[in-house]
Image (cartoon, rainbow, N blue to C red; front, side, top):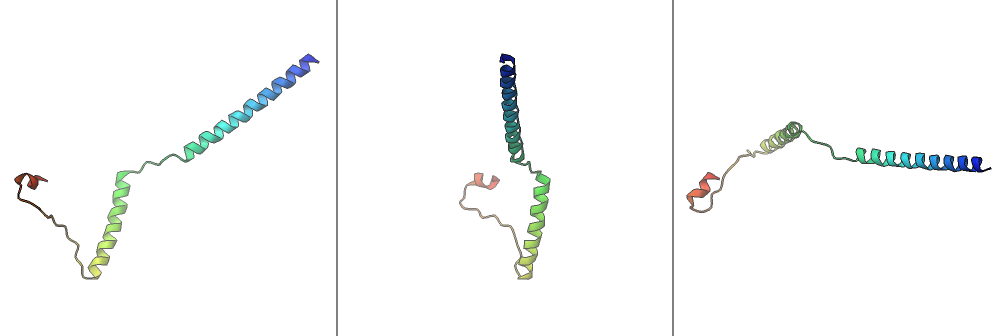
Length: 82
């Protein structure tokens, strides 16, 4: 009787260990699936460039020419380098 009782206890322990292992694997998979994705700079720049081209074309259709300007405030010579 003690051998079958010990075997039953061992089977229960093995079952619980397997269940725990499955739960840990599921948690690891969930964490792995939810991890942040690395963005490549070239892809992001390309997408932004295409979006900007469309926006500029829309502005030009309305008679607006996009430009870039620098506004200097003050007389300090050191500010010119920036």
